Length: 467
Ligand SMILES: [Zn+2]
Image 1 (tube, rainbow, N blue to C red):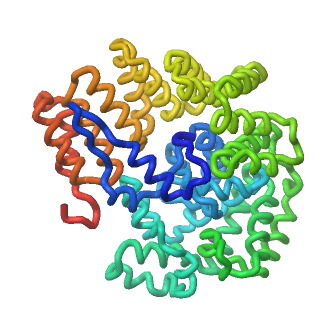
Image 2: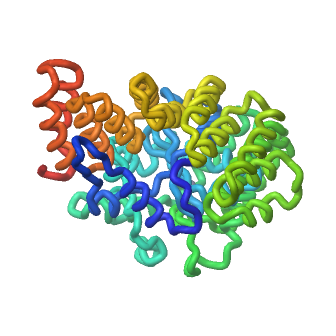
């Protein structure tokens, strides 16, 4: 995970990440203004977790007939349980991953969400989310920061969504989010059972998750999971689901062992990053000497302990599993922290080579290490690697900062300003994006691809805004 800062509420952690997105060009610093910090989804980027969740979703989406191209996984740094899909984006709270003991529990939730998509439920909200180009707009649509518990009491829901045009997008989205009807839930459940059946998986995990929500005391408590609010779970629904699920010959089928290990490693990672090492130990009590525990320990040592010891632990993991790209990534992270960018670059290069998911995140980390080396040829290579990473992943906001720095060091000011403009653009700070795009154009060759992209940013009209 990028930007480790444990034990800090999501909002301030995000604020930090954005403040860190200051870019220096020609000695002038510019930072994302407060507006962007308030409006953004607290997104966590992590190559390992994104790849795993994508592996969970792929067969289900195929069975649902909604697998057109790749699915973008957006990990939301929030301890509460939530998961939903819009367009090609799947939003999933780290809390949902942490609370799910098996891959099957999350796969069941994904199957249910796929059922909502296939059924065309909440079409309007989904369309808006799918169209929203930047996380800042997505945050507005989702009403991030809105008190879900408070909103639950006035769940006029879909009945009032018809007058939604008169309402702000945020308010409409909030009502929409609360609005799955009972008939829609039943439809999504049946579809989910179909997809699980078609992929030879059990519906037990879905049942486990939903039964847990159904038995929760009430929605009036302090910790309300948004998922529970948007998906009503009356007991008769769970009973019905149970009857149907048990009919499947796959009901008692377990997740493949390799998948469970990856799941455990992911949970250990999230636990250590968000709650410290003790949380990982509690989580993996059953398997204290297992790989996930070793991994959690190595990450905890990297975050809170001394680099030398962390490096030894990472190397032990690499020795045991030389083909795991994320152990190499951890080695790179440790070496960056120890101020050894050249060695870190080597570790990230191996991670990129070994990564079957071809994550742009690892590639940008590689570029970042090359940039830290500081020699002109390394900086030139950094530009290449970061651009490759961005080709795969255009919304990687911090990558634009590194790209701007690299171009700045190479004296390519026009390209540096365009990279800064892109960073602002994907942060939803359109005014500043346009200012930097205009500056970039003065230095770029008229009609060149970079000049044209700058023009696109200048011409961009944010949805719902008159800027
Ligand atoms: Zn539902």
